[in-house]
Length: 299
Image 1 (cartoon, rainbow, N blue to C red):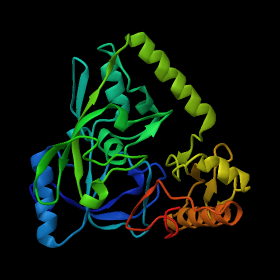
Image 2: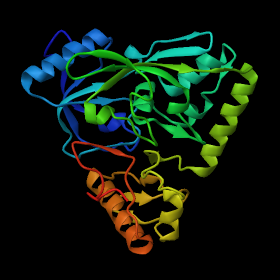
Image 3: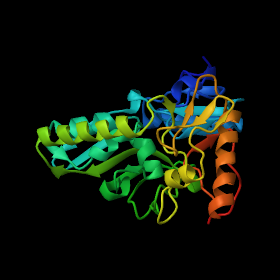
């Protein structure tokens, strides 16, 4: 242990990710409060280290060499939540599924789409996550954001510049520490039925192996999966990484895949889709210690 914060060294990150890929974190901490988070960031700044915030590890590709800095993993240690009237407030480490369940127990709905996003509230708010025609931007009242200069702000979706699968937090270096979401009145049984239907839909239409969710954002007017399938890439493999035969916008680790395998597959698919359709697909997956996909201009 390096400090009273219980910062650890050389912690493997692959077990914390959906793809089960990636090397170790040079330093690693699971903060239990905003105060601990602030202390950890100050510690990293003093040492000149970069930091990265990790939740459930979906939509992430971690470099085979790992991350040469401090990884802050948001867990149930920062996962408290409260349902009050039509609002639910949660810390960043709260699992999306837990929040939906807690709201349902108070006969509140409107968050059901989050059950198909296997992540945390912090990650969902950070990337304006969405599914089934709904996004966090539709339900966000405000987010609590910690900025690099130490300011703790409460911000709306407008202030986060929300658009499709985007907020301005990456550019600003902001960390989501909590959020307040709006719910609607709905009997618990109805919420549970909708959650069950969405879960069934997901099992039937998305691969259930080692997958990180959608790899690419959807271009305007079409879907990445449709373009990839039309290009004949379903089942394409690079090393131990494969374009899922079930859904072309999901790539799976067949067992033993590396970041190099997955990145190679992502880039190959980008090139093939561009060659046939004349547009570049842009990764929804974020890189940790690596750049994901090809460096191409937005089209």
